[in-house]
Amino acid sequence: MPGIVPPGSKVLVSGANGYIAARVVRTLLEKGYAVRGTVRSEEKGTHLKKIFAGYGEKFETVVVEDITKEGAFDEAVKGVHAIEHTASPFHFKADDPQELIEPAVNGTRSILKSALNESSIRRIVVTSSSAAILSILPERKVFTELDWNEQSIEEVKQGKNASQVSKYRASKTLAEKAAWDFYEASNTNRSWDLVVLNPPFVFGPIIHDVSSPAALGTSAGDWYNSVVRPDMGGKTIEAITTIGGGWVDVRDIALAHVLALQKQEAGGERLLISKGEFVYQDFIDTANALSPSPIPSHTDLPKGRPGAGKDFVAKIVYDASKASKILGPELVYHTMEETTRDTLADFEKRGW
Ligand code: NDP
Image 1 (spheres, rainbow, N blue to C red):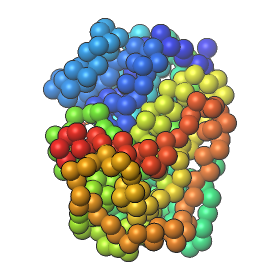
Image 2: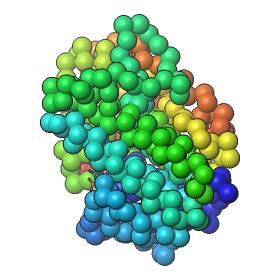
Image 3: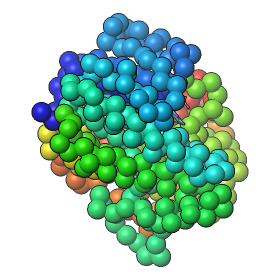
Image 4: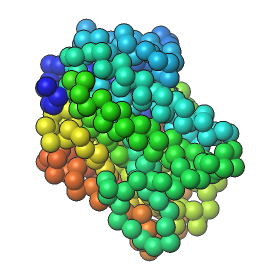
């Protein structure tokens, strides 16, 4: 029967070496699950094996070289009770939109298809994004799980000329649509139900393998460039005070992935997971106000235009109340101050 997956069960996490996924793995292990993580090469599993060595046989990795191939996950799904599908490209460097869309959509279809063969699977959680929900509108709008980003799908019809954000947003929208379509079409022959999580920008301390700030992923890298680098990564005052978005701490989106396995009512739902809106000036002000400073040796944090974030009126606002209701009181979001302090302390420890 589809439904909840209790601690003690085995969970497959795709793209386990990623920023969010490594946290999902850690949270699952902490809560008593066994985890099998997929990586694209043996080498990419080395760091994970090291940091989760204390869990012994409860953590293992398997190599899935090409997630888009039919049957790619057939071996990986054997004997698991749930899947957290996070693997998908997240960058703003694509030339052809298909560079993002193909692995996002076909990777999703491929893992769901493999999951049809494994009757032990009770639930699948897919990491989508608020990118699959938002639209750019002239007016302010509070977005909910009822909204779909059709705008980016239209925009990528221009091919290479579409904006970078549209290419990524279209990949997430089309992948999530593919997941729901597959779910409906396989209604009579699957043992599992589907939960989709839609976070906005994810920030917070990293535990995956990153050698330098330049190698940080898209969201953590953007935070580092804006809040830590004295030149704000070359961003203008206008950019850090007027271009905003929603955000959530990586530890909270990881916990949401685990809670999504534990709540019956989550089955068949998409859930916006968001702490709130921000402009980088807010994080910059928070970083400068921390006392005691988590980075005593680092005195050249950017200042931007202190206080200017307060004038920012977000046009895109996310209503995350459905997730709070379904995932329950355990999901308590980290505050901006906590996320900023812990992220800076993490960077300080790494000498960044
Ligand atoms: P990372 O880049 O840190 O991790 C992405 C993971 O996906 C890695 O394991 C990566 O493998 C794998 N991957 C990327 N491209 C491919 C591909 N073509 N084929 C197979 N595997 C691939 O990203 P995040 O942790 O930030 O993102 C994880 C998920 O969360 C993604 O689905 C993303 O869209 C979503 N998300 C992220 C947000 C954020 O702010 N970070 C916000 C909202 C959603 P490898 O290391 O081998 O490249």
